[in-house]
Image (cartoon, rainbow, N blue to C red; front, side, top):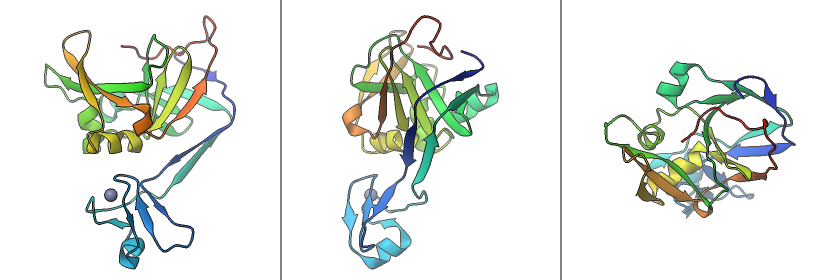
Length: 195
Ligand SMILES: [Zn+2]
């Protein structure tokens, strides 16, 4: 589907790097999982384990109707944005298999060209969501969640079929994700990108 739209039922999506406890006295880092009760860490949104100041407050994305637009070629090549879901920059991958319980992103290319792995870790990927379009379901993963798994080396590497790239395989248990089971009929498939 290169233009037009696809209907999904209501869903909510949250992208965040940390959680402040209900009493406001501790902060949990979602990069590493560490909780700090140090009031200065809480005030500064700081993780002493990762040595980072968190920038992204939780953002809610809520859709009742998704308008899907194909990105400009430049956005795709430079910023890893394949599609726009309304105003949300999104990476998209189609797979002709049922969801195997993990997702894959390009890890290395023989050519040395920049891969998603490098773009996501380096912040060049401007997508905030990644949609994996399996035969039996759509899986929505925040890019921050993928970044966290990559930073924590929570993935394995396998060669791709083409022998020119390798893939980072990330188990869904190591990610925050939203799974939407789908029954697809002919002609209903998104067909933006495939490997
Ligand atoms: Zn941390």
